[in-house]
Amino acid sequence: MIFLLFLLLAFCSENVECYSPVKAALVIDAKTGSVVYSFNADVQTPPASLTKMMTLLLTYKALKQRKIRMNSTIRISRNAANQSPCKLGLKVGDTITVKNAILAIITKSANDIAVALGEFIGGSEKKFVEMMNKEAKRLGMKSTIFMNPSGWKNPRQLSTASDMAKLSRELILKYREYYYLFNTKSFAYKKITMQNHNHLLGQHGDINIDGLKTGYIAASGYNLAASATHKKQRLIVVVLGGETARKRDKQVLELFKKGFKRLNNQLVDIVSSNVKSQQKTVRRLPMHQLLRQANIITFDESEKLLNDYLLYKQSVQNRKRK
Image (cartoon, rainbow, N blue to C red; front, top):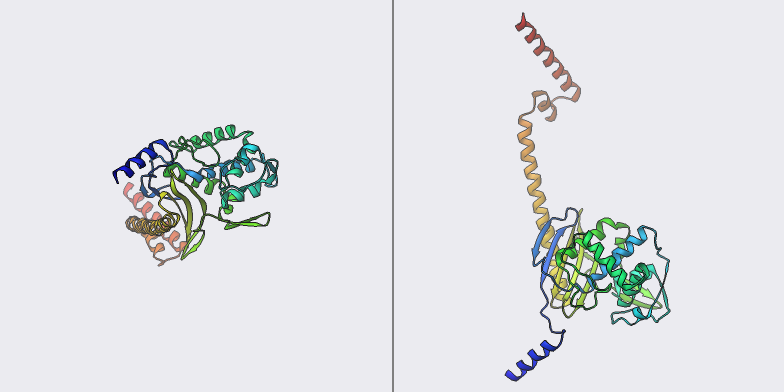
């Protein structure tokens, strides 16, 4: 047993594949950005394929600025073709449209297409990574360093649940016209249908999960940045370091349920507080306004009553002067 333990320790010291992924979770209100729940949200860990959200954000930005179009053609470079799986498997010189590239990244989480898209927008992978880090800085993602467009393992590529939530929120609020693409459950390309790795997409009771992105490498564990709506509210949940995809998904769904419940309780407290405040304000109102709010008199009658009162007050003051 001691000999086996020695071998394991020696192996881990020689290889970068031995990790203890950071476990982190964050729930925020998408509209306000306020934190509903947080655990290790600011601890750095590899983002894995959550990195592709930034690749997609810069793609949406280029589309919005009309620098590229959905039907623009991307040519696969040797660098892109040589990326490790998951990949679409296109060969050097093959082409793909921007829209199909987006869908391949969202569903298949294709590393080769993420790199090809980055090269297409930035001119080279290196320049595109510079764009990624510049955008991260603009968004206030202070603990994030991007090293590639795909999220493939690199010891220097790090982020936090807090930063991934900021990135998710930017995609939801600023790029609404493209956000629906994250809800794509399957993508057919060259007669092959690929299922989205995000198996939580869809309706869960009265909660509808409609995005965003999964991620996994050994160093990170199973990651997921997700967003869901309940009635008119929207939450963003980021879970990092899951032991398995199933356990991660279960935790995300549980956080949505608890998050919406907590959000609803906060709204009830706010409404209750406002009602009490209004009640205090009502007691200070002039009689004509109180009568009007109580529906005892109409607006016109209220105004007449106020005018009569002002005339009476003026006449009293005139008598005093005499």
